[in-house]
Image (cartoon, rainbow, N blue to C red; front, side, top):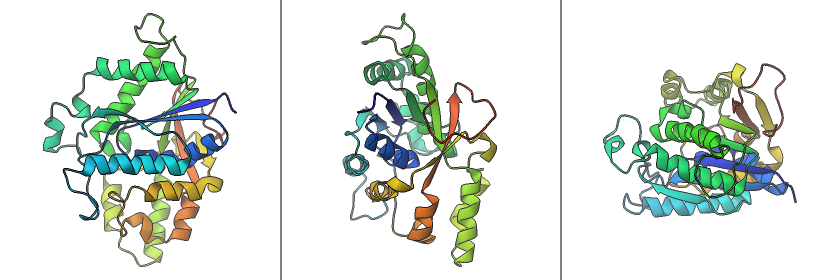
Amino acid sequence: MSNRSVLVLYAHPDDESLCAGTMAQCAANGDRVTLVCTTRGEMGEISDPSLATPETLPQVREGELRCAADALGIPAPIFLDYRDSGMDGTDDNQHPKAFMNADAADVVARLVGIIRDVQPNVVLTFDETGGYGHPDHIAIWRHTHAAVEAASDPDFQSPGDPWQVERIAYAVFPHSFFIRMREKLVELGEDTSELDAFSERGIGFPDDQIHAIIDVSDAVDRKFEAIGCHKTQFGEDNFFSRVGEEEMRRMMSREYFSFGWPVAENGAVATSIYP
């Protein structure tokens, strides 16, 4: 059994897909993997109306995340029971219970309690853009940094002893990933308009800020099984599936991370999330 621990902090069921292979590898190596989800994704879209209704979606997506955790070989996720804030600019942003509007002191205190309990070496979360600007993604990035700092402060009142996290890492898709995907779609004669719309919003993390590339090819089957659990979010016609399973397996066999804290020095690209 390893003495290493990784804490994964995300906002919605399916966010963890960004680093699913790494989580599966860590678990297989005996590392302690703890997944925290701040909401149940109740404002997400529903790919097939037979799967859920707006009223049942929170429970359905909770089940989907539990299914994904089982597939990855990690313990059941911890839900913090905030409300999904919806996409940026929607009316749901104004809901008083939306995660983006949650009291920062409350969120940080809860995260500090978890950090001191599981004592992670590394915390995985979103980068400061939230990947594509989702307000909940940006909120968990902000609260993660505050909680990591507070968790090491002996004067911060929270159960458990102070704990110093060694690294915060952001799971990301580099810009080049989407370039390769678009090239493959063009080669197959597939429609690229959905991907082009994402690109216009600047999707994709700068390649020169990638600090680790993890080969997860030995966990790609578990990763695909976990992603497949999120049936309400990934319909059969999503643009990932259009490039073909063989190509997607190849592309999904690498996971990419940027080290958010401590600030990484320029140098060789690492092959592990751990310092």
